[in-house]
Amino acid sequence: MLPKLLLNPHACPALRSLRLGFATAAIRLYAFVKLIHTFSSNTNCLRPFLVGATFSPAFYIAMNKSTALFSCAALFAALHVAVAGEITGTVTLKGTPPKEKDITPLKDDATCGKLHSEMPTTHFYVVNANGELADVVVFLKEVPGAKSTGATAEPVTLDQKGCEYTPQILAVQTGQKIVVKNSDPVMHNVHDLPTVAGNNEVNQAQMPGSGDLTFTFDKPEMFLKFKCDVHPWMFAWVSVFDNPCFAVSDKDGNFKIKNVPAGKYTIEAIHRKAGSTKQEIEVKDGAPTKVDFTLEAK
Image (cartoon, rainbow, N blue to C red; front, side, top):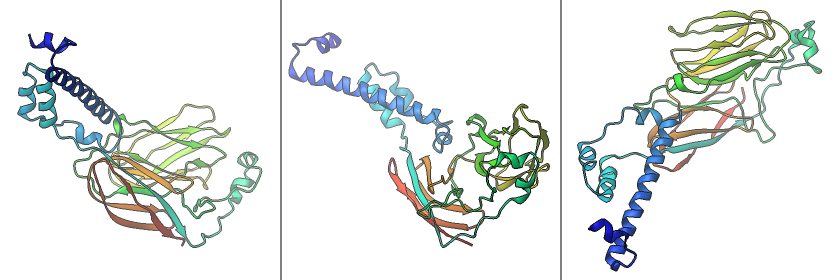
């Protein structure tokens, strides 16, 4: 009887309101399910908190209710999900960075030198006109309950181009694939040099036009070095984390760490040459958090 009344356009105002309430509840339920699907399918900070989530007994009881209104209300009461926050910021360099050094052996090399029209230099300080600094690794020191999602994360590419590694600074999760390419017409030798037990040293030749090489690391480590034994000026540094809460500043010094669970954290910014700095921050449900850093040239 009740379903027929709810569908009747001439029903009394009270029933029309009830019908509207059911529609609103259905829309909210759909939006909630989409939200959960989006969070759980992304490789980011919040995903480790949703995997293995436990529903209270009230949730299962609610599923036996006969109306969508009761089910929807019980669902919202039974499961509390924090809305993820986002950390953004800019890293600025204070002072004048040292002049970059010419890579004379590269320019003098019979093959590699032809790949450069000008003298190549180091890239220790990549700074724009406003003094904003690239290649700074920014990360949360501790994220309770967070785990690596590296096994399912998109691979990160490390290329060899112009007889240089690019990018020279990158960051990955434990278990995340690093795909090393050779875009040069010369042979390279990809040699990683970990210092943390559990991260394996690998030394492999890579011919021009050959297939990609794949590296993964099981333990966290800052600035794990890659080099080329054929071309001794070639270096890259990979920072490995056991959770997804990190970023590397771009050419304009900007960084973004997405989907951070609400809470208080220590956030740190590290540059290979300019050193490091820390701040205490609080991330609130669904709210953006702005954090800027200043590092001094050394």
